[in-house]
Image: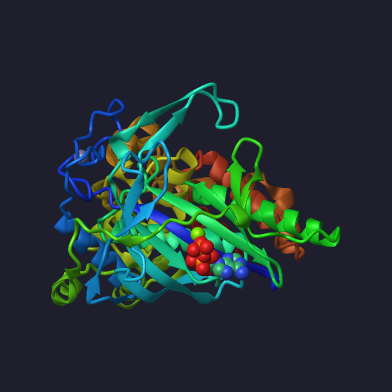
Length: 472
Ligand code: ADP
Ligand code: MG
Ligand code: ZN
């Protein structure tokens, strides 16, 4: 349920992890499987005398994202220093943007609580560098010591800030899913890498102050933390305890949030323009980046409906991941598009989810082959599901699997034979059917399925049994 008294706004940190090098130095961004402190240099370690150089590609990617989120791109944009001390930040300041962010005033569409499409406004999109990472020996509150890994230091990051337009934890989740979807379409982001997206969630009840739950990296975690906050804030209000503006930490293991500081302890970051970087005039780049934008999820979904004549729900499901969309289009060019939509959106995606694997585990060629068998009616629907499962679990190709598993549909003559035998054997059911109990036919059809060892099409068997009963 969308709840009228709940207000949520998100600040999302997105790593542009498909770039080759970091934001201000030449270090590789490909550190995720490397030992600590192997992807560093004097610049990202903040050694004295070093100077940052902006990664032009990163700026282009940022423009790409801001455009896709329907922001106005600022013609001139500027980096600032945000000053604070923390062990993961060797310079003791973070280079970020402040009052001239790259993008302002955007929006995206999400599926709202009532199932209707809902517009969520984007306040701003700005660029910044990622700090390093602390690795605690144990949990953050109990660790005897912590280690620091600077591999992440200087990774190109975008911060996407929403207006407080979200009304429930589920809508927040829906926003994050859509954002991830768009970023993957833009080919600037791989959401599977650790820490690729980190979210600060602001939440308040109408008339109350807000709590900011910091730094959660899973969408499900955000949803759970927000649900916890609603309960906590409501119960505090009932007890007459006012919510103060504060920062909270989400304890994933215990599924609760705990306060870490209140507004009175807020930092003064002493923002000032980064003197080692000049302002960037990016107005001239925008038309080119805009012309190169790929087709985005909403547009693709509309095109799928128009071009392939498939249901909107199927189109939505098929475009919710770029890899699935590409898979579908590949198959739809070589098989009946509507049949393909049903089998990919309703069956294949379910089987993939169940096994927690991605669509790369299944070949479009195999899907085309299976759809061909269904069309020619050489396998039943049940048989086709079985073929998909076997391929996912043990491999092989469709014709082999059908052969080895005896999954081919029974020949028409064999089905007819089974029908007559079943009608002859089930005299009681036949009598019941004749005296007006239509459901009795299911018993006879069941017998046909049994006799063909499940290789008959149930619909067809039903039709044939009816025919046979009329003839006798
Ligand atoms: P700060 O800079 O202190 O984090 P901002 O004004 O930039 O504050 O807001 C940050 C986030 O807080 C935004 O995502 C915004 O939508 C959200 N926000 C603002 N007011 C509220 C509120 N009353 N309840 C929940 N979220 C809010
Ligand atoms: Mg904030
Ligand atoms: Zn470096």
